[in-house]
Length: 119
Image 1 (tube, one colour):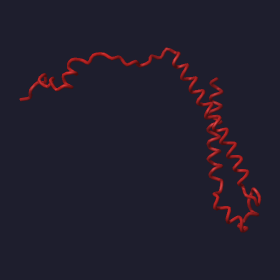
Image 2 (tube, rainbow, N blue to C red):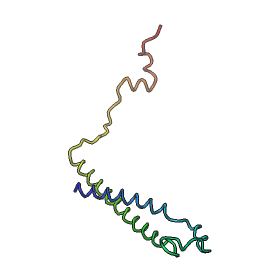
Image 3 (cartoon, helix red, strand yellow):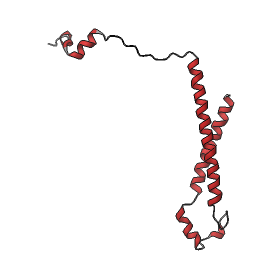
Image 4 (tube, rainbow, N blue to C red):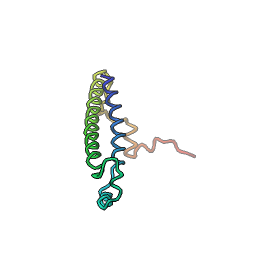
């Protein structure tokens, strides 16, 4: 199962980088106003309609894959934590012991007489 986790991590990182790249390539909503008046739409790679629908679909697809890989990595992490819990790793348990006598006196202020005097 270790190779599967490595594969999911690699796909997750590649999808994350591609998703960032796609978001940076996309134009804002205000850029469509210039294209409506013939502002160089014939020179675009994606045609006169612009790149909106193609890039939007690709971004949606990559976002879905990113969420699936994120969920898969969370499941892998949970399984790894359960295996570590079953491996005999000691757990920290709090015990309620009575405080040490010196510590109790220093909290109340009566332990000040035990300190040596400086001359």
